Structure formats: structure tokens, C-alpha cells
Image 1: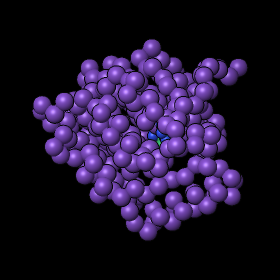
Image 2: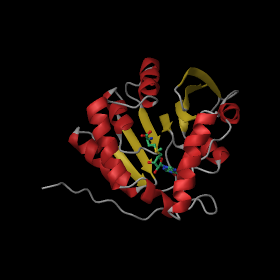
Image 3: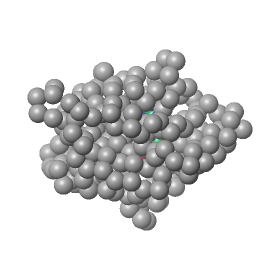
Image 4: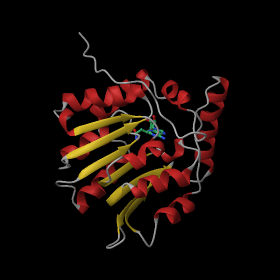
Length: 231
Ligand SMILES: C[S@@+](CC[C@H](N)C(=O)[O-])C[C@H]1O[C@@H](n2cnc3c(N)ncnc32)[C@H](O)[C@@H]1O
């Protein structure tokens, strides 16, 4: 019999910033199950893999992790297996939190992770900062890049890892198709190609120094380290 994990389904969202009702329809049970299968068959995706490797090379042993937009939990499970001792997982989709919690319990990590369902930006101030903050392909699901990046920076005591879309025709086409699909479905969810240079500047000096980066066809990923004395 399929195991069930109970999760509260109240979704909190920063008022006036995003409509939380659209996300669970896009990030639903089916996509969550597909993402878990993909992780079990092929491992981490093309951005999460190098981001976790870069974090591991800076030393993750004994650190706490906050992952925003965990999806089905693949990166979070891998970071715990790379030596992180405790984690907070946040996702606005209850379906993804349910899938991620199942994955954690299958891998023996359930006790190490506290879960929140809702808009990270709305809850950031009430969360304990973490050594490592991780956002893989999340800022592009949020209309207000500045608020999300500032909330992520404010929650990071050491390392911040983030993947966000490249500003090029291929990304615009893919994102345009996703938004057209959402409009046709009368779903309020939208994706955004926020200006990568503005993201880089918003995170960057003097508080954070870029320590690793890469690109894929659609994405930039970067890891920044907090500079000494900046907190
Ligand atoms: C494109 S998916 C990426 C999931 C996962 N990080 C990965 O790379 O496989 C974006 C995820 O971020 C979540 N999300 C989007 N906006 C959010 C917000 N404001 N607060 C918390 N989670 C959010 C979505 O529900 C979804 O699971």
C-alpha cells in the first residue's frame, strides 16, 4: 500500500506579490512523482549537480541548509548525504513537500528536516538563518526578484547557491510557451527571465563574493560566499 505523508495545505504568500493558488496546479502530484523518478534514475539535474559539488568543495560538513523551492527534494537529500547535519525545506506547492518528505524518509533523513509550505519571501524573517542557502530555478517563478534575492541573502550566514535563467532567445521561447500554457489554463502562475546582471549585482559585493559559477543551455548557476565581517 502506498505510504502517505500528511502535510498542512495552507499556503501563505506575500500579499500583492504572487498568487499562491497557481503553483500547486503547475507543481502537482504528477510532476513531483516524475522529478523523484528522474532523480532516482539519473541523479541530480544539470544545475543542482554542479551547485552541490561546488558547495561540497567549500566544505558542507556539519552545516545547516535552507533550501527554497525544494521541488521533490533531490538536492536537499544530496546535501544531507554530503555532510549537512540539519535542514529547512520550503516549497509553495504542498504536492512537492509531500513528495520531498517521502524521499527524505526513504533515505533516513526525515528527522533532520523541518518543512514549511508557502512563500519563502513572506516567511523569511521568521526563519533561522542557515549556513547554506540553496535556490535552484526558483527566482524565475517569482515576480519580485529583489525581494526574493534579499530574503535569500538575509537568511545566509556562509554560502548562497542560486540558479536562474539566462537572458537569451531560447529561454524566452521556453518561458513564453510556459506562460501561454498557463494563460490558456487560466492559471495565474508565471515564469520570469529576471535580468541576470541585476541578480548578480544584487547578491554581490560587498557582502558576498562569487566563488563558483557555470552555465547550461537555459541557466546560470552561481555560488557566493559571505565576506568576513559582513554580518
Ligand atoms: C522550477 S521548480 C524547481 C524545483 C527544484 N528546485 C528543482 O530544481 O528541481 C520551482 C520550485 O519553487 C517553488 N517555489 C516557487 N516560488 C516559491 C516561493 N515564493 N516560495 C517557496 N517555494 C517556491 C515551486 O513550488 C517549485 O517547487
